[in-house]
Length: 193
Image 1 (cartoon, rainbow, N blue to C red):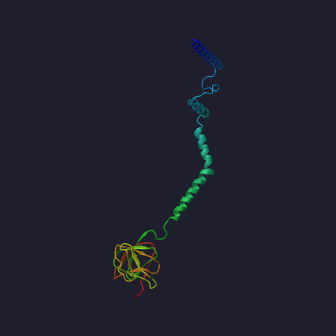
Image 2: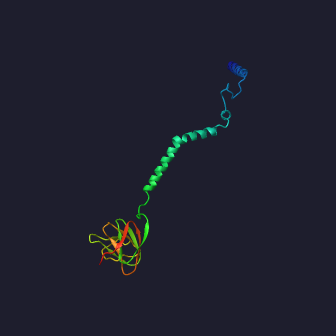
């Protein structure tokens, strides 16, 4: 029984203290969420900031970006564009080394291929013509053979010049030859035979 009496007295004491604090805060007249009562909600903070700025946020952001453009953004954009342009210019093909050229070689002329040049005989008949100082011939990448001096050039097979040493092909007979070339080449008068 004694315990129950102590619990009732303690409960009444807590209620009395709570009532006293309630009365004290009611006398200050502070409304919940006001400057005198700092416990606020998110909506109150949002509303207070919005009303304080009164629509000035877009203009402040715009002014901040405009003031940053000359000093930060413009040089950054310019350096990025310059870097991209320089990289693009470095990657441009030079001459005909990266493009396919359709070359018509008349009788009495020869097509000389530089080192690394690839070509395909598409029309007519041709033979391999090597300079006296040339060693080897053309690599036939399609059949895996070497085409030496005087060999007949097969049509529609990919050939490769290993060196720039006067390697070429000559038309046979009185007809032109049609050659697809990737790389550097020269068409010149054929040597007298």
